[in-house]
Image (cartoon, rainbow, N blue to C red; front, top):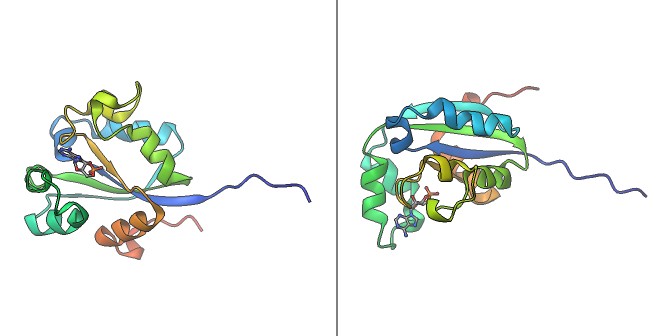
Length: 148
Ligand code: CMP
């Protein structure tokens, strides 16, 4: 039997972080997602509380950068979104580029907008498990647009 190519419609969590929001780069960053086939199906702007930021980044609690990360993520509003598209989780990470902008490929969001490994403009879920958990952290199912 002929193999059909795999098409996996996925959702992933994306955050435009306080540095990029402060620099008025929301529209420019969303353009990177939309021109590469990722659509915004939910969005809200939140100024995270310390409790929210600590809880969201709990997996990094033992890391030396944790306190600074929490301070940065609570320094101003962030745009929290659900992105949907074919292989959205991997694709989003490709569009964002490496965590450290000095290692990010040309044309990626972090290469173009991030200023350091901490002030790195965007966050994206790193696995299907993380995407599910992170989307639920911020959104109720009825806050996410469904085309069907
Ligand atoms: P993000 O994708 O949001 O996931 C965890 C965040 O921790 C990461 O982006 C960076 O902003 C931050 N981070 C990761 N490694 C370091 C590091 N070595 N020093 C400072 N911040 C880091």
